[in-house]
Amino acid sequence: LAKTTQPISMDSYEGQEVNITCSHNNIATNDYITWYQQFPSQGPRFIIQGYKTKVTNEVASLFIPADRKSSTLSLPRVSLSDTAVYYCLVGLYNFNKFYFGSGTKLNVKP
Amino acid sequence: DTGVSQDPRHKITKRGQNVTFRCDPISEHNRLYWYRQTLGQGPEFLTYFQNEAQLEKSRLLSDRFSAERPKGSFSTLEIQRTEQGDSAMYLCASSRYYRKTSPNYGYTFGSGTRLTVV
Image (cartoon, rainbow over all chains, first blue to last red; front, side):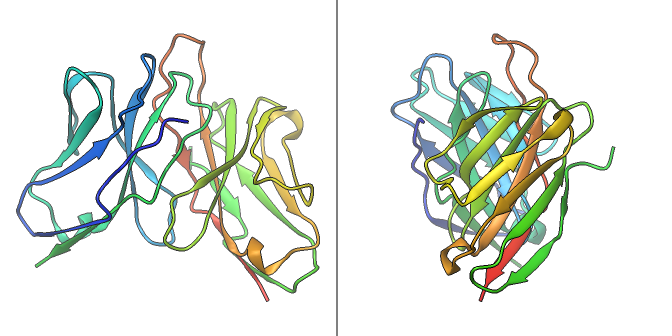
């Protein structure tokens, strides 16, 4: 399984844009990059997925450089409810299993 | 469609007892996964099914653990002779797998079963 490296924690304030970068140096050609969000006592929730360049949905944007060895999750104008752990995962197109790592604990302050 | 459902939400058991958890996936999802998560760590893969076939098991799944998915619908995870080290959140997820060249747009996780072994 391709492993990822993320910051352990980040602090932000309400209304700010938050960028969480993930390193995945050993990403394989067929791997996709997926981000999940997890609140305490809940299962992880899918946020966004991409293969290259930029992907945007109603929740976040995902930026992937040409070498694909890293990716950045961008959360626009965060609120207190975005306080959670964010996981970056890489996996094969058929996604039979993921390596989650410890994730990034985002703390949004008022 | 009410998402992935797990039962029970919480389970406290004495060391040495057997426990069984149930997962009901999203009905049209043909893949079902079990993960385990301990405090402060990310989920760790245990096993997965495609329809009723168990296709892969992690080394974390000792012989005290067994998972089934009869008829390719709900799944059960049984832990025999529980140990304190089994205390964790057990997460179930499901997904729809189309074909080898098709991206799988992520899992849908349930809320988990929190097991406490005393």
